[in-house]
Amino acid sequence: FLPLSASVASAMGNSPCRCHCDDAEHDVDDSKLDKIGLPLTFNDKQENKNVRGGDRVCGGGEEHGETALFHQKAHEETYRGEFHQELRCGYGVMVWPDGSRYEGYWMDDKAHGHGVYLQADGSKYEGQWEDDEQCGQGTELWADGSKYRGGYRQSKKHGTGCFEWADGSNYEGLFVDGYIHGEGLYTWDDGRIFKGQWVKNRMEGTGRFMWSDGRTYEGHYLDDLKHGEGLFTWADGRTYTGQWVYGRQHGSGTLTSPSGDQVVAQWREGKQLRGTDVTEGKWV
Image 1 (spheres, rainbow, N blue to C red):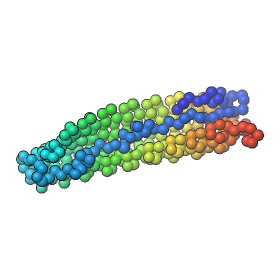
Image 2 (cartoon, one colour):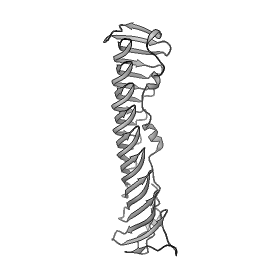
Image 3 (cartoon, rainbow, N blue to C red):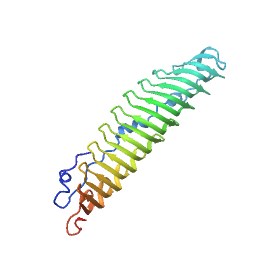
Image 4 (cartoon, rainbow, N blue to C red):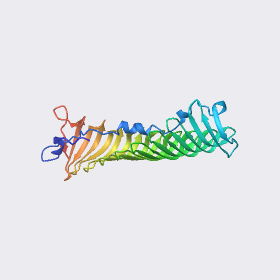
């Protein structure tokens, strides 16, 4: 958030209050959120690549519980592990030409059960799989040091989880279909904290935002912006309680000084209205 303006810093003194809060909102960096929506899965590697039939070179047995090795000529892929009726079933290791590999359990030719998938760039998923998709509990690690641990459904982060970015920012709370969605706590690398409700990666609903310098806001949000009723408290003890529209005071609101003096005023886009067409704020 940008520093408060000079008019804010001098507000609530001996003169009538001209306090406004036009500090810009900081939403969650979209480039960070892109990472949340990119599951580590090898579904695309499996697509249209039949591992049965004549394009396989096998060694060993193919009965249930026995280990075999096949090499797909057409796609330069190798699998070493267990089969059942020519389907990968049981424990096995699949290696792709780019160096990606899956090591874990299979059922009916699909990753199923506990397994580890390692991409060529060093990104990694370890956890539960169902029908070639991440499902259940798992942990993802990215090459840049980012990390997620929590629930999955159909290869999307779903349920309770914790995402840690490489810069030290982190989110802990609910995910739905690959989005931050529901109740959660987001901490920025500079110490800012938001605890409250989210809708598809945006602060939306009710919550509490805390700055490292002592400022706080508690109230309603819409699309990452203060919107609706809310209480803003400055580090020196001044407060504004009232209406907000898209991040700025707008409508009626009450300012209270650290000593308890109050002024009621009308606001428009973050500024207290003045002039003959609007009643000045007055001390109450």
